[in-house]
Amino acid sequence: MSKQYNSVGGGFVMEENGEPPASARVTVPFPFASAPDLLQICRERQIPMSEIVLQNELVHRSLPEIHEKLDAIWRACRTAFVVAASGLKDGSCRELRKAAIP
Image 1: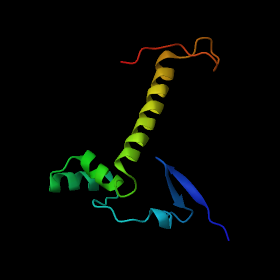
Image 2: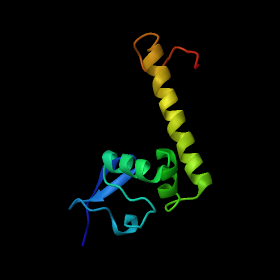
Image 3: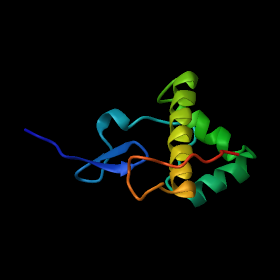
Image 4: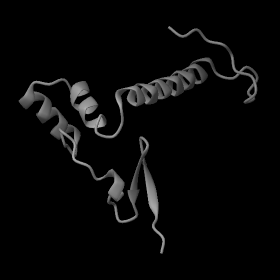
């Protein structure tokens, strides 16, 4: 017996049939399926989007783990920005120009 999982971005996976794996099926305090749904929750509850997302994430991991993952995402984005903004010195992938990060 085997199962196929597909990456859907953002560190999430779905089973081949489009369902999240059983381990990912948990109840969160603020369930939503789309950006309009999320915005409606924000308006109705008068809660910032960041707080809604944080409360949902806390179901899956601890606050220190969330901060660690956010830091890793920030470092990756920052690195990508430096490469895109500064380009390569000689067209190779070996030497990158140094660029100041604001």
